Length: 69
Image (cartoon, rainbow, N blue to C red; front, top):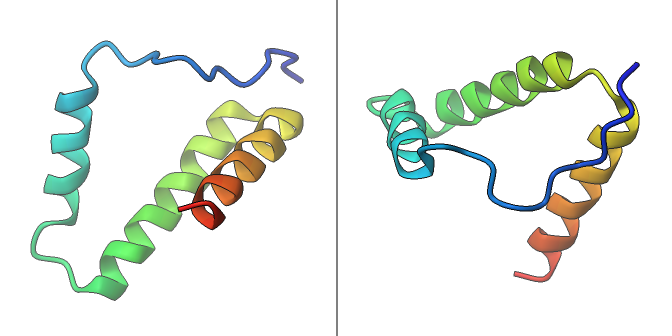
């Protein structure tokens, strides 16, 4: 089990490039398919991270940011 805290500072070497890939991956998908793709991506990356404490912190942060939006 990992014990690394959630990284909250920018950590992608090419965030714009990743964002473009993310949008491209959803191109020509229905809203339902795009939602499914994002859900699958979350599960794949969660498995890669593997640390429940980090994932719980990330979930809470995402929820807080969504409710505050």
